[in-house]
Length: 538
View 1 (cartoon, rainbow, N blue to C red):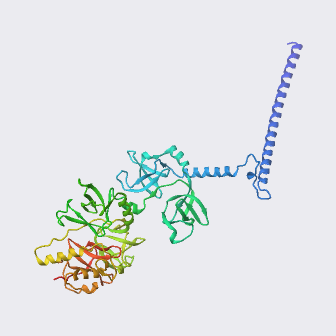
View 2: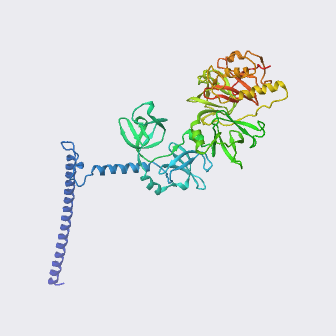
View 3: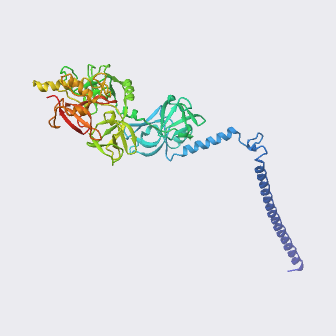
């Protein structure tokens, strides 16, 4: 290779080395410059953040985000809207498997998944529920809402995203009742005269306003101490127990007579008393099964009695009239479910047993305690010390209506003695439904137990003292297998002292002036354990 060529090669290599050096230096300067720029930007960001934080609290306490002119701040309206949106989403997300009622009015909640199931509540339009399960055929949802469970028809329930979209439109500020029962008042002040209704636990009411310990709802005012106010969906309402009692009847009928209405085995009165199989007490209810072709008789089922009653509107209420009467009449009753249920003098299993009750008897409830119920047994002096245990499920406490009782009138026989007894019994039965009055002796205006038996027998020339204990010493003692219509059956109080008397009317029944609530009524003869039975007629 010549010197000239070597020199050219050397110069070319030198140029290439210079270009590599320049390129490396350029990259180095770019990296350094970029790093410096990042640091500068971070410093600026920190300074701005510190400046904004420092300026948030002005000398007068004004937050700059609330002041006009700040393009990045929220107005009070925007802030409220944001908080509401958050509350709505929290209300919707409170359900794991949300369902929304898509109905006009309300959707029935039933005890069982079928259209014949007992209605136990209602789910208003737009109300929410937790879907717990769905029946295999998909026709019913098992839901939880309003603090209880039941079944609703699935065709009226929105689910999934549809439910969430509908829910967002129905979340409102509501008051959720936390007490067992809460009075609704016409004005925000505690006064017995301004109570207009009552709300039950878990019921929800839309809030109109809040002030001075009161929450105003559309129905009136409730105490703020017994409600939780928050944004939420409406939920199911359990039917009140009176409504549930009325809803036991598909086609309700209610007796309007003051005493008893005859229930007959056939739609005719031509047999006189011969076809009477039961009595429908005043304000007692039943189901209408069918109407006779001439429209004069209803075939009914009331209690265990199936028979016919007159369809005359002066004796019988139907439709809305019947429902209104039934709602007024339904009372809290203790329904005995076993024979020989013990009545104790105190709400304790250690207290004295002073009588026993028969199955299917119903008694007015005076007070409900934990595991016990206090009942009105018959006379006023017994009402304060008659307790039944509810822990063994031997008694059911519920609102109920009177129903028909089995009754077959005695036929007068040729035998003079039996005919007289029959006359006495049938005379006594005329006064069924009349009032009980402590110390009273009037068969029409009011009598107590011994006043009733005294006056009935006096009509037939048999004179008794006006005191059950004294009446129990009259005549002669008979056994239950020997007793006949017209004999007197005596019952004792907790101390074993006789304090109640009734007249045996045959067919295992008695007529007696029972209590202030029940008046003169018919009962089974051993509804209480008898103390003595006396024949005072012969």
